[in-house]
Length: 448
Image (cartoon, rainbow, N blue to C red; front, side, top):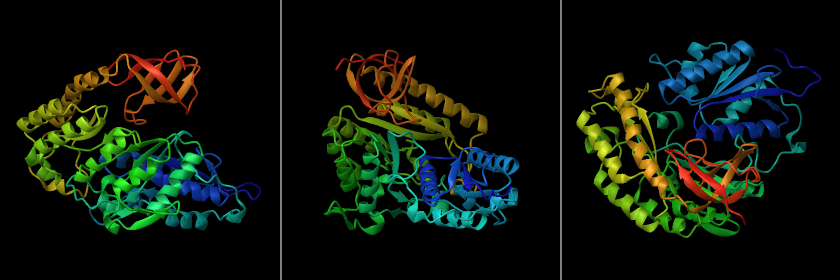
């Protein structure tokens, strides 16, 4: 396919994977638009296609390779970026290049400059970027009213089931002034909810020894608490994701109690059995974790805690799994996700003995989610007959779909408002909860 001399160069874009990959995609899209390229969600009419991949688990690798193959078949000119681009096979060759040798270029994650170099090589810039008009908040993949804010790249942990450090490197925190300026631009553009993401949010600033930066003419430390405190001044919902359970997490609870940031913590506990946690190279004191959860809830009674777990990790016995179920009953977490353990090429856990058969791993995942259903329902029932604030995501003739302070987009529940056709997308509303199910709330608008 050749570029028409009379048309604006057009780049098709396919983005897969987690919000962190989505944040990388937004940086690339912003650069493309700032340089005058048109962006398309279609293969047809695009001069080339960028595929932003995920490579964390085998299913994600297969999905990414399939997407690359489809782009090659439909368009023929493909640049690959993202985590899969950094993965090698057992012989040391790039997986993407081995499977799809006709791609134009391959880069790893957070590689905006390398991607743009490849675009320039195969589709020259249309004009001088200094005369292009671009919104200050850049190009985003999310709706206008919420946005992800990535505060760092990489991770210093070496969890045995994870290959993120080999793909994205050690922790690199963004300067706090830069983060806050981006957050301000998002709020100025109309964003009502900022979701803070990274590989390890509560480690923010460790790599730079909590260096002092500047925002709004005043000094602010590059530190988890200081960042949360500053974000809390922006007057929008601030939601914390991927929070490793360090002691410093306790410091932000008063900010939640005071309403500066949302009473919501996404903490990936992964398991409860000390031996399994040690094999995972995760913190191993489950009893201490239960005590901390109790202290968190004492400080912030309406705190929502979301977590993820792995069922069927190598060496996990039926007794270990039953211990995890018992721990969940004690912990009373609000939102839970579970993955059946899947060997990831390059992960240290692959060498561990005692991998349960696949059918047992899948069965344990199902049992865990069924066990959690009653707990999640009971947690939601606390909200019955209460008035709560929601952020409206969608409105049609059947009513409105919104989210509460306890609901992150795409991964948590919804607030369904059958009589909410008069509400506005992207605005806050007061509703009264009238019913619940396992995941969702049902509510009616409260007259202002």
